[in-house]
Image (cartoon, rainbow, N blue to C red; front, side, top):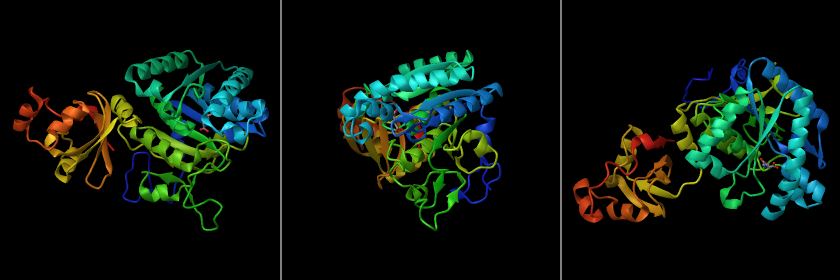
Length: 387
Ligand code: GLU
């Protein structure tokens, strides 16, 4: 059986007792609420939200720090503006819907939490806020202060200003990134399904998967690419991507059925859910680096170099076969092996033109190509995360 730290060759466990324990033992927990749970027919499900707030208050009283990541702005705003397709017909519609819906959403959370004697705080984040190291640290400090004061941050993507290139798009991955920034130990995604199934949950032979130790291609093949409700953008693939991001940062992630009242207590008391164990390294800087989503370029390395990187070496120019993209020194780049599998990512020491000039060259020939003494590495191992 898998444990939170167990690594096994089979990525999926079939037996799991008390497998959702990392949710109840988390010192700091991120709870993500999907649009389909909060909004029905364009109207907020106030009773359900009140019950959840009461449940969160009980968890808070038990000593857990809580951060909420809540969707629903677009769905609520679209109903108020009378926009088609739930406000998702175009990015412009989604941005307008979010601007209207976010006020209502934040108000509803503030009131529901206040009824359970909790203080709500609103944070609207864009991808850039978490990609840029300085802004990431600012967000992280704000989470720290709010949580120390006992407030419950309620986070959403700042959809009204996020354009296609700079948006997460789904709150599943946002929740995983927020968990890192807030220093959380676990994430629970409240969904309209009770976890991962071996195939489409509607299929007669689909089996529920209680524990996943590693998100492999086999696991990904089980997931349906679309959100069941059509309201959010999540879908199981986004949830798997979130689980990977979280796991890489040493954070466990669970998907549970959010539909019943008090869904977390219910899942912990023996309900179903899928737990993705935290397998990755928990070092904060590397966690941030590994979660960087916007890569400015790709470096393809030869097989010998790929093996050396896996063994902990820094990336040297001699092992690079091709340089793709246009990037500056300090940008994040992906590193792929000859089979184009992404094996690492990190911060590059050269801009793209310089790197093209020295790719594949031994060190003694690099100086002539560059016109200056080459740096010790193209991507130093301290600035690189193996994937
Ligand atoms: N940020 C979006 C909203 O509040 C939801 C994104 C998602 O569906 O995950 O409506």
